[in-house]
Image (tube, rainbow, N blue to C red):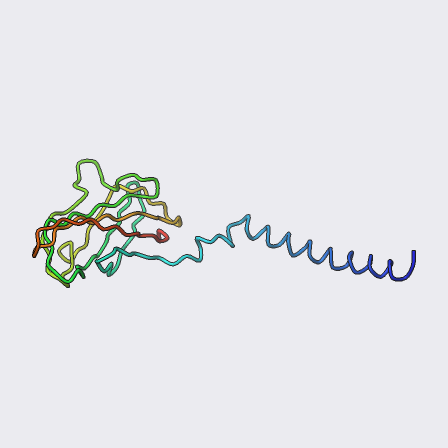
Length: 158
């Protein structure tokens, strides 16, 4: 074997082993969940037309999701109903509980009488991520026209 070929083989062997060790380390981190994207996704709550001032996730079977929404439509609303479905499309309502609250709210007023909307039908596991879809149906008090808007809530359950 000539010297150039020998040098090339030594180069490939040396750096090949180094690359293999790095790939094995990355694989181990991914396997144990350290590199899981859900660990880096922030908690969020967004509902178009409404401000999601805050939300709270409480673990349990059933767990509780509490949403604090504020009317930012620019007009008063009536017949407001709020519902929540989990990532599997299941309604987050305990047996016999109403999923929604009917009320009227002026612009800038917090929905849920200050205590927020509580949904107690979702199974929330401590340490896992929850992702749900919020649907708000309301009527514009000035025009009488009914509207539906949606949003998302997601976060790690403490």
